[in-house]
Image 1: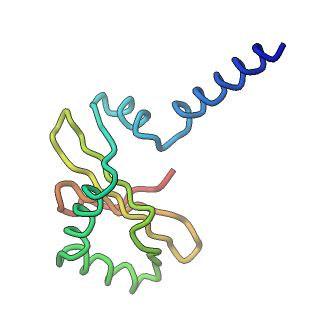
Image 2: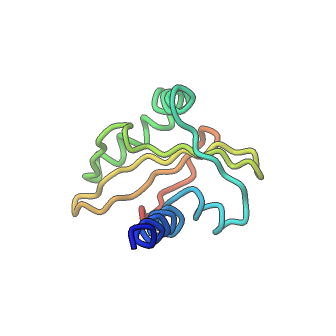
Length: 117
């Protein structure tokens, strides 16, 4: 009985890793491309390069004027699209009503706003 419960719990954990929306695996399935998350010092280097640029500073200033809030880089997502050879960075911002949106940059250039899932 213990083995059966262990197997069921393991299957539940595995299913949750691949079925939860917003994971890199799901993103890869949606676009038919291969993406990998970038973490650690490489992520920090990419993020700091973008946030120190004028494009991000101008965007942040215009979003603050609209009432958006930014809680820093801790929840920033960085992915590398192997198929297209593009680095994708998404910064979470929060509207006045608390709705989370992602401001997306491809290779350091602003691409637009996307609803966060």
